[in-house]
Image 1 (cartoon, helix red, strand yellow):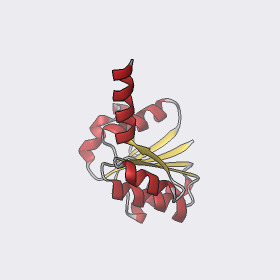
Image 2 (cartoon, rainbow, N blue to C red):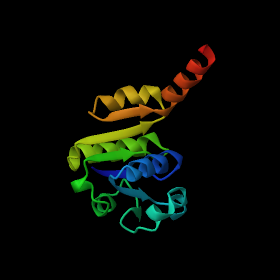
Image 3 (cartoon, one colour):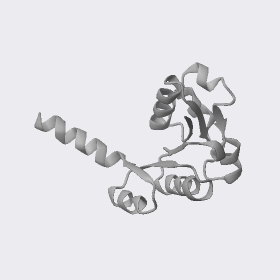
Length: 135
């Protein structure tokens, strides 16, 4: 499977590395080249995998191979940027699966109406805390 991950922070780097280790073709796009230090050495040294660029910019998405992607994961820290990337991936570039990280549970409900898979970090972490307390 070909996966384009936008954002190489704590979450994006972990997702990208796990998928890459499972044998998927992964491209990671981030504006900050220092963010790639979170990736395994073999990934960050491969210029086809770690690309410096803006995930909201069409030319950078095209350079990352968005047209051939099976999945696009928007994992940046800003909800609005993630939504923009996921909408472009799904509706402009016809990526079959667009997955969007959101912090706001309210925004998560709205984003799902656009046909985008959303994961609310706030809801996930809250659920983990509650489950840990109740065990």
